[in-house]
Image (cartoon, rainbow, N blue to C red; front, side, top):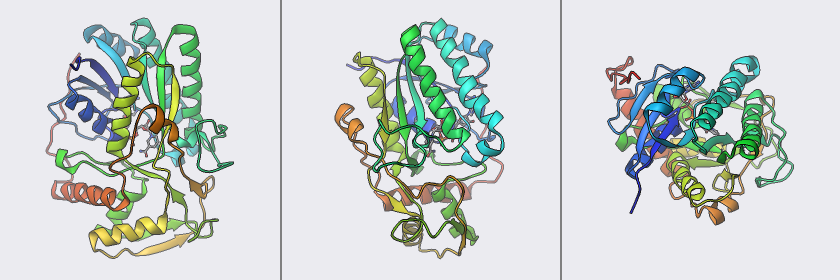
Length: 341
Ligand SMILES: NC(=O)c1ccc[n+]([C@@H]2O[C@H](COP(=O)([O-])OP(=O)(O)OC[C@H]3O[C@@H](n4cnc5c(N)ncnc54)[C@H](O)[C@@H]3O)[C@@H](O)[C@H]2O)c1
C-alpha cells in the first residue's frame, strides 16, 4: 500500500514543477509548493498548498520545515533563461546556486535528506561525443549551465559530509502540456521553441531560426524533446529509487532522438494547419549543433520510459494548452491562492 508523504516542491507553480506536483498528488502524496511566482503566474489548484515565497528566505524555510512533516524535496525553482544568465550572471548564480545552498542547509538542519534536483543537459556544453551519457565531461557554456553544474557539485559534497541523498535529473528539452488539467508552458519571456512557434503561428508573427548552417542534415539545430509528463514520471521513479536506499546519482532524461528546428516547424504546421512566417538569422553563440541524450541509465536503473514524447503528440498538447490560454483574459481572473505560514 502506498504511504502518503509530504513533499516540498520548490518552483511547483512553474512548468515542470506543476506537472510533477500533480503526478505526486495523484500518487497520494501531500504537496507543499514554495514558489515566488516570479512571472506573476497564478496557481489555483486545489491539490496543493501553494506558499508564495522565495527559496532563499531561510526564515520562511524554517517555518515550512517546522510546520509540515516534509520527507523529501523536489527542487525546480531556478532562473532558466540561458541568455539572461549571460547578461546577468549575478541573478542566475544567486538564485540557482546561493538559494539552493540555503535550501540544502535548511534540509540538513531539519533532518530532511532526500532531494530530487532539476539539472540540465546544459552542464555538458559542446558535446565531445553523441549521444550524451552521464559521464560526459562538464564544460558549461553559460552561467546557467555553470549554476546547474555547481549545484550538483555542492550536492555531492553535502552527500559526503551530511548524508544528503539526491538524484540530479538532467533534462534535455521539456515540451508538451496537460491541457486537460490546465497545465502547460508559460514562461515570460518565453524562450522555448514550441510555445514560441505556436504563438507565431497563432498570431501571424515571424519566427526566427538562429543558425541555418550548422553541421546537421538541414542546417538547423537538433534537440531532444521530452514530454513534461515523462519528466514528471521520472521524478516519481527517482523518489522510489532513493526510498529504496540507492545511492545518489544523476540521470539524463531524453528520448535519444533529436529533431531539427525545421522538423519542429513542420510538425507545428501539420498539427495546427496554420502557416508560419519564417526568418533566418545567424547562429547564437554557445548553441551546440546537436544535443541528444543517451538515457540508457534512466531506462535501466529507474525503469523509466518516455511514453508521451512523440513529436506531433507533444505539439498537439502544447497547442491545446495555447488555445486554452487564448480564451482567457490577459490578466488572469484566477486568483493566486497564497497560504500564509
Ligand atoms: N524547461 C526545460 O526544458 C528545462 C530543461 C532543463 C532543466 N530545466 C530546469 O527545470 C526546472 C524547472 O524549469 P521550468 O521550465 O519548469 O521553469 P519555470 O520558470 O516554469 O519554473 C520555475 C519556477 O520557479 C519559481 N522560482 C524561481 N526562482 C524562485 C525562488 N528563488 N524561490 C521560489 N520560486 C522560484 C518561478 O516562479 C517558477 O514558477 C528549472 O530548475 C530549470 O532550470 C528546465
